[in-house]
Amino acid sequence: MRRERDKVEHVIEAEGLVKRYGAFTAVNGVSFQVRRGEVFGLLGPNGAGKTTTMEMIEGLRRPDGGRALVNGFDTVSQLEKVKAIIGVQLQSTSLFDLLTVREIAEMYASFYKESVPIEPLLESMILTEKASGRVKHLSGGQKQRLAVALALVNDPLVVFLDEPTTGLDPQARRTLWDIVLRLKEQGKTIVLSTHYMDEAHILCDRICLMDQGRVIALDTPADLIRGLSADKTIEFRVPDFAAMPGERQERTRGWLRGIDAATSVEERQEGFVLYTGDLQASLTALVSGAEAHGLQLEGLSTRTATLEDVFIQMTGRSLRES
Image (spheres, rainbow, N blue to C red):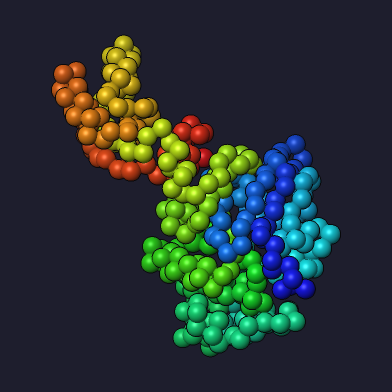
């Protein structure tokens, strides 16, 4: 039966998913489709509804509205069939600390009628040297790789990874990124939730940007950024701007908004971000204009726009502030 259903083009279909907790609506009409073999990212701040959305698709939470299909199977009425073809790494996975890595992998494999060989699985997760060691002695990165391994013991068609690198050091994060990319090469469909912009940009074929329980954008990382009014930014600080008289502050804001080729200016706690389609023209106008207005610029830097800028322009705040 699985091979017959493998022909479904969209391996996941979420249709108007709603989840309420009393008067609070955690997920409010979320809809999207996930293509077979892609890494699909749910990107948004904490509390955006990413985990709840994933749990409804995994069958761990019953939707209050809408429905979700995984490989054509309804996650409510055909839950057992869904469980057989998915693997789940939860945001917080409780492991049996006194078992060895090999023992816990074998235990999870025993839950399924069919499972993959344990030793090659542990090797792919860079856990061979830890196979005989107890779980309690693993580092944070090793425990996360073990959680991913446990999600793969049944050779799932779809793998759900919920904030897999939260709390890890940079090296451990990079190791997990490599593992995700290898899973994609093997043909796995991966749904990944994260609030790290660089992670989403590097790993995901498409990104579903979420905020306050809703989908606010869905596209490839490049096209999301391309959709901005400008794809280059100039960041800088104006010392003592907050202490300036109100009238001079307004004059400064007005001048910045009128800079050549600038499409918009964001005023942030740490300074200003100027968006432009012509970096050289705007930079020249900024530096010469600052001198003419008697303003000093500090921390001047330029960069290409990021997914953070997409989120800010759509919501008026950064992912970190949310």
